[in-house]
Length: 309
Ligand code: BDR
Ligand code: CA
Image (cartoon, rainbow, N blue to C red; front, side):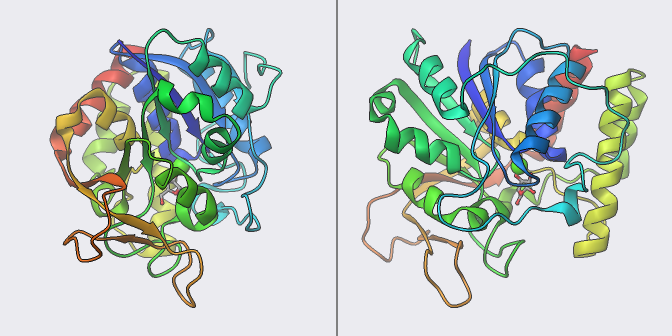
């Protein structure tokens, strides 16, 4: 089984990413860390704890991380995820206590302590991951890969060309992409194919478990805000695709490409400039997802949620 760490900002789709990681025994979830993004770090941390409680996960350490991006000011996504960061269902409170260390320190300890190289899955702004790589370079050779949800090979969702996780902390994304580590970028160009349709929501509800109903309620809320903000008929379920790409790499098709993060830019700060046609002559920075097996993805997610009961 693969040892993984998840750094997240739950968030409706982050919640599903946590459930996928918790519900598939091929992954060994070493720890969960949180970052400010969709909501403040206090709220994303509480949400991570509440989702893990719901999944019956009580033996995985959780630590809160960065309250703000490296350079930018924090702008949360309340319009999409609500004032709690996880609006919709009635969730119970946390059952486990936080590990009494900062997220970056928890990641460091778990990576250094792992016999096997660790895969780091990031589903929020890359603030904690950047601090880890810069502050503790000794972890770099002990990481197998960083798989992050963020960016896009085409348009954005927070600005015309910028995706939320990268726009929130562009400097952090730049540090991670230039770290020399193998990285996989799961951008909007693929996540916009995994839509929580009415059939998907009905499948969650039809599981007949509390968790299934809560997933249905989460996706119903997510659908309502995506309709309001973007006019989308069905919301894209971004973050669990990053976990799926670790579980079953064949679910995404990737191409190695140079990826630059626009740090200045008059209109495009936070855009990921993906050189798919190798025009810059630069070496690749990431394996960039360009295709998704949508059916295989949903099968994986549904069986994980069903298994958690
Ligand atoms: C990303 O932004 C967040 O709102 C989601 O959780 C996802 O990680 C999509 O742009
Ligand atoms: Ca997220």
